[in-house]
Length: 303
Length: 252
Image (tube, rainbow over all chains, first blue to last red; front, top):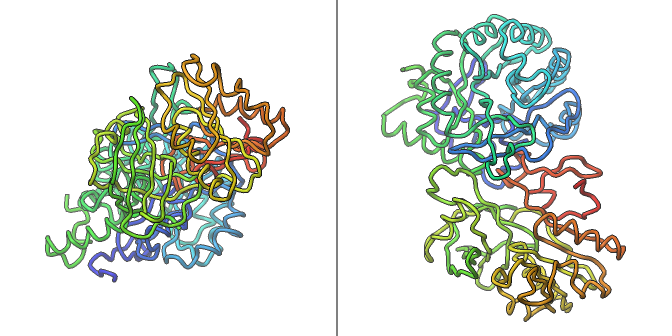
């Protein structure tokens, strides 16, 4: 049963609870249906979608590292047309907040995907991925420069009429500067952080552990960095912030909300425990009981 | 349907220095388990290791609702797993992946190292269908062999040992049993072995099905980390489209 104390909002998005799933960690949602009821989530963000089909990077794409993992999937997906035609009809009624992560290597690509998703009635928001470290062109390139970030956000804003989330990379000197530029260019909210650029080495074989040498680090090892970024950004913009980075349990969600997140995305934890989001939502109700909260939103930005 | 359950460790037995058998009991009726499928085991409290360990299913028994796995100690998590006690529980996601065909008329099953483990359940399925399969097992030394008697009860077992300390000396591809006629080869083991076995299958003009063990995160087709490049579909998840592939479909 829905616990109304967990209701929260991210701009125009009304969420049953603050628990979303992070793009690339939850497939199209259906992969997890044996483990949890998708409709109990605050929402879910489907795999990064690009204008054209992408094969992604060669295997190996994964390295396990202390309290985390590095991936270099490289946005493997079948393209936006396939998503609209084949995936969307299957998932559109699974949750009221199905959000599409939009990726690209050029502004035209981002705009093409955004405008096609704009026509899908059951998708209330997109998450603009200007922060993927695993693609050669575009991706993180847009997210590390405030002028380029502003330009892509502005162009997408002009073709996308619903809620526009912009996902930020931590691989920058000053994340606040990028956040402000995205806000000014028309973002409705910001989600952060994407993965940290990282690498892992096989000392015996004397080679990198993943095919692309570098990849994106995620998991509990990045949480302290993510908390710092969310705290810095949320206190310097006027739009809502969605916290991401190493969330494994309800306590982690509370920490992100305390430093300013209105909602969160759970990522790597879904790999470890496919029913983790259900446990997190239950844990948040328990936290509300213990701290006598009428609304979980009372936590937002207390620190 | 996939399940996530706490399975009770009914039995733990060391088969040799590096391999141990776990018999895991479900409190509910076991779902259908197909030969070649795997489980994804959460190993608790391993310093800084996060991900589950995908392990192929060695046997399943519906009358006792148990699944058996053979685990090789190769790192921190499997080392930790070797220290579990009978009576404890492990959180397991199962059954995962596709399966080997049980429709072959005269199958040759080839296993190398711990890759021999899943061939037991496959051999059992053939045996139950009235076909006593041929199982060819390869190892570097005879100390690495395990459960040979168990296999011999349901299959004709042939052995190749690199140093000649048991069976025939040499690699599985040198074994004289390969001179016989088969309808297909079904294999699991190190990639170089499976590639060599596939060459033998090509010579015989019979299909060869291989079971891959790519590095995985989720095991359920969500993370796209464990992909293998295929002729017709490009990169596909080994955890959902595999782990069993027709060797001719793989670009390897």
